[in-house]
Image (cartoon, rainbow, N blue to C red):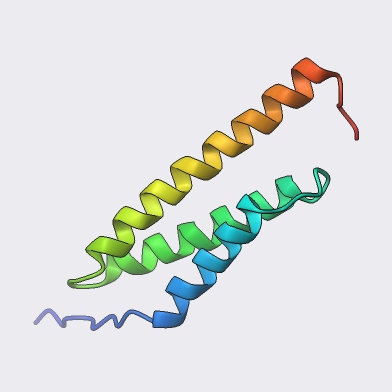
Length: 91
């Protein structure tokens, strides 16, 4: 006999990753930005796993997560390019 595992989505997970995502987007301290991005990406990855395990629902949030991850990766790429091209390494 196979038992079904019930997974309930925690609504606070939505708030957590969104808050961290917005904090990374609006961080003005260049030294803090990489850590903000990494922290947001971690929370987003954890939430994506929760949504994957959920039996149904969460489609809108999944889409939002994908778009937000794309934006953070683009931001990370811009920072890396600016650091490499601008000679600001170690600042």
